[in-house]
Image (cartoon, rainbow, N blue to C red; front, side):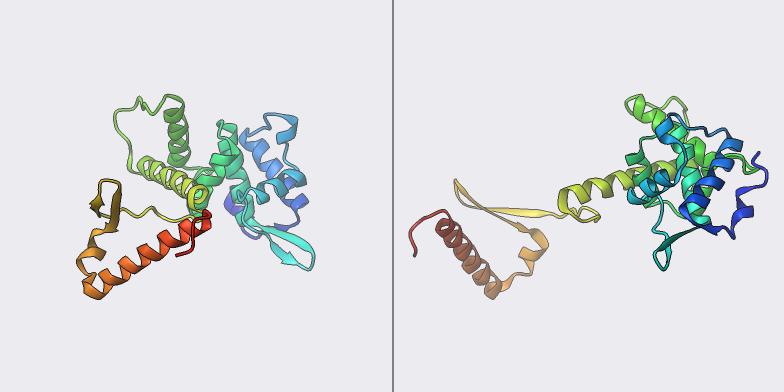
Length: 222
């Protein structure tokens, strides 16, 4: 058990060096040693985690960055996942949609059962096993952690695809075949409420778009 508990440091406030020093002591008590020399807790690693959005943006006092208890929880929780084999990219995704109180549950040695850390391990083991999970039942907290991981993966993928972390939108579409090679695809609900004026506007917009495309490709001006 961590002695004293992490809750004891709620009033912590300091520089990146102060954060690294305190987190080093806590991680040592928890047995979360560095895997390699490059993983050692240092001001450089703190700033690297901040750039990766694993740590929240620090507060500012003039030009100095000030880190607080929130950053301490984030850093120690991240080290717990890294010690369990999580890549930093996955840690970033997981943290993006995980409240601080749930990150605190990832920290072992708090004098209580640690279902969140077990759930995190389950997610990783399931990934390594190709999605096969050996346990017959999934407790509610583990299902919640798994759902958060899936949402983090979704948001990360959507940001790569569209530039924004938004939920994909599922809509019913209607395809109108004007000819064998010409098809109009329009949202069904929009089509129901289109009206005659709307239909005329769609037709003119399609014509203008085709003319613009032909012109851009070097075709003759209409």
